[in-house]
Image (spheres, helix red, strand yellow):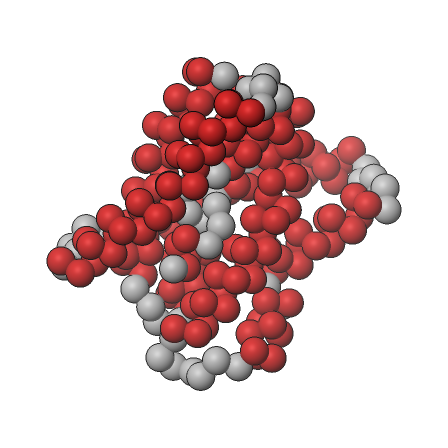
Length: 207
């Protein structure tokens, strides 16, 4: 259930979409990520906490944890700065860009570090069911959106691409923190990453 909450937009989608569709594509997928971030940093963590055997669900404690979660805080602060029109000096922008370069590599390292292929029967069933549930909306949008909207629209492309992105890496972080099934979360991320590359290639080649 944690793995079904949200998509890996920032680390996975941004580099590919910017390379293919430029800054305009990046802008549109970033808008998609606005709603996605609340699912990833909010709903997913609430679910992780609810199913943890260590603590009973404490809404106040959960929201406090979310508010102190650095990625979420960074997103909110950057959004506010953007709304008020604050501009960073070029030197700081270049420095942040250099710091961000290893992000994808580190993210893949985390997946590989936790990866374990020794799944039992119940875990395999859960993995297959999860993959089907996760990609049904994306497949439906892929089929139906072109019937009603022009695929030349970057908004439509962003919706189609965003809805087939892999599971967010926080699935592993939350699972490890709450003593849930880290092994299954890791394999789910890896599986969705492979499937997404295939679907994303088809969409980009077709439109």
